[in-house]
Image (cartoon, rainbow over all chains, first blue to last red; front, side):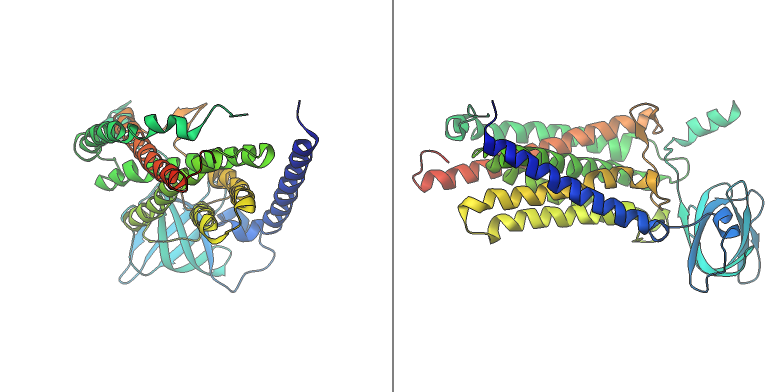
Amino acid sequence: MVGKKVKLRIIFLSIFLITIILSLILILKSLENEIVYFISPTEIKNLSELDKNKIRVGGMVKEGSIKAYENNISFVITDFKNEITVSFTGAIPNLFAEGKGVVAEGILRDRNYLVSKKILAKHDENYIPPEVKEALEKK
Amino acid sequence: MFKNIEPLKIYSITSKAPKYVFFIFILILSIGLVEALILSPEDYIQSHSVRIMYVHVPSAWLSLSLFSIIGVLSFVILIFKNKNLPLITKSLAPSGFLFSIIALVTGSIWGKPTWGTWWAWDTRIISMLILALFYLLYILSWRIFQNKKDLNNITSIISIVGLINLPIIKYSVDWWSTLHQPSSINLINGSSIHQSMLIPLGIMTAAFALFSILIFLMKYNTELIKIKNKGLDRL
């Protein structure tokens, strides 16, 4: 049904695609640690040595952990296994709140303490009108 | 394969279609905009900035779907040397490119009030930027290369390579930790967007899809007229 040339083109395209996909997988695998936008408090606990460069830590802002001081705030990022305390100076994004996702960029003092000048709020995939949210919480 | 699609024979249909499509597009868009901007509720945490979603998400969906159509048709072009499909894939690209740009720009506008930044080097955003660049490469390759014989092959190869990027865009939020939130609509688990917000999202997607069809038809007709003027009776 299919001619010899058509068959050849199908084989060529398949090999072409497999080659690109395999090389891409190899590159992405080797860069896995660089590609992630942030790391979790648990991954920081497991670091073999402390990075002197800027890193990003992401997780939930622990309930009741936000404390405001004169010119900075401190809060705790948790991934529900490990925690890290963040001291932050700068502009706070609108969606930053306790119990919500956050990504803090800064320099590690030690495995439990990050000094940050930039935080980003991370929001989740739920979109709910306020009245419905209230009704859900009452349940 | 596809021998029955004779462009010059269906021209009588495609030349009349745009005005009807335009009418339906305006109708659906007006309903969609009223639903999205006025009738739909605000979000419990994002309040009114959630309305950017009704432009951002349909644009992203359409730019992805249009590119997948171009990519899949390109396989047929390359393997079966089809002479009529290149006109279709070529005409699909402009609206896809436009929507990928709209998705990036509205994402940036949305990112500022919610995340606190215009831009982040996050895999979802980078892969979306790559998609826009692939669209640009695809559109430019039609203009740059002169040799008619190789033109179909070169453009098809570009779109097939670009096709690999699509699963990366789709699954980037699951494979790596990203600033971009995971997808809200899932075939198995349903949607985590409340129904009152899902309806305007659906209507806006339909409106944008109609816009793509409109631009596609206009571009397709222009290409056909170009061929007619050259006095060729087939492609």
